Image (cartoon, rainbow over all chains, first blue to last red; front, side, top):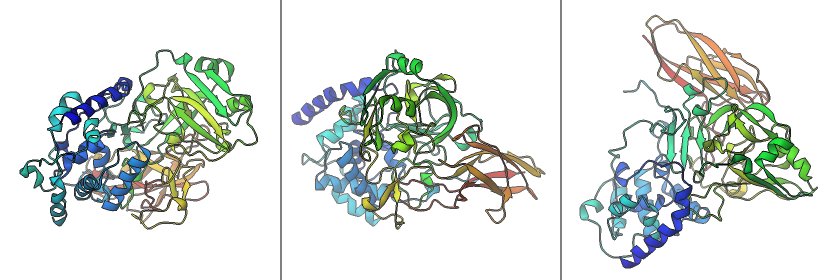
Length: 115
Length: 429
């Protein structure tokens, strides 16, 4: 716990300049807004270290594609590496909560008269 | 729900503290990832661990609309962090897209607005005879400014139509706008620096911070072949629709590389380095802004060696009036349509519209562009035989004869080049 708090403090200091640059306040998100399921909170906080969860939730992919995305984030966007256990939790959630969907179910063309 | 059961084992991994309570007060979402969530052995509440995947209770269904000073409240937010918002087709009904309706795409954090735009510095270096360091004020006074109306379009525009879904923001057709840009041709500045024979490619850098907060990491850094950089239509701009370029659109100064993926048009421009080979900054390699050379099976992992850079954007047309979902009085027999069309580096040759899902087509009246890279507005009048539900489809053909397909084709992992026909539904009576 102490170790965790220490890390949190260090993170706060490290992020200070980044916060100062932001001229727009993103909408507050919390995990309850998104599809419930095992691993939701872990996945939410892992992804939202850098970006909004809406970026994740608007997508829908297979487990293999989600794994590619995570690898891309680690390789190219400073995401801390996940150990096998954490990776399985995050992938398990993404696979179950955000599988491939048809365009109409994820923001593509919507029939405005459909009931 | 076998999937859910399989995942339940994983949820034994714990959250050591109530992160939501802790983070809720600080807004520091970074905490979760840095601490990691399986450091300890304490379990999370059983009820939580057993929760099955269910649709989210909130936010409400339907689009999240943008709330941003000076921007139209009809823009649809695709993401808050980074801020990304698209313009519904029916808001693109102006010949020149007003600033308030222009789409927003960011890759990193939004910088604070500069207090002294004319002191903003731009550096041109790399494969040039003499490095240039110039302020925006000097750029305005030393070079001859031009104003051109040109389309700016996100490379991922149309991505939402891919099946299976491709990675990234799920743009429909709204990652596009056509504004009057004022600035100087990049070629004029490069000529003063003097390109060495080794000059092959540009590398663009900017002032926005990477989302991770790492100041040493560009949020995005793309570039173009030197031929495109020397095209007289590729501009360093500081004006948009006669106004100083707003911060949200990259002000005080950005690039406009018309016809190509919008990411080449670096916002908050600070430096252009001329390279002797293809640029390899963030956004240039692997699957970023690339399409498959040998067509790939949709949904496959893809092979980076089979990808080529998306340069010119594909042909596209949209119906800007009526809006999707418009209702007409009973007995209406004729519908007047307006729209826009564009085709990357090419021109649009022809627009056809259909009210029977493509069984038959009718030619629309197509305007000429004001200048190269302007979009082309079109109008048509279609007859409907009765009251009822109708869909109107539009299909553009570019100057080389390529038409928009019914479906987003040539699937690629990050979903570029999707230019399926635009359709709207209307109800008569």
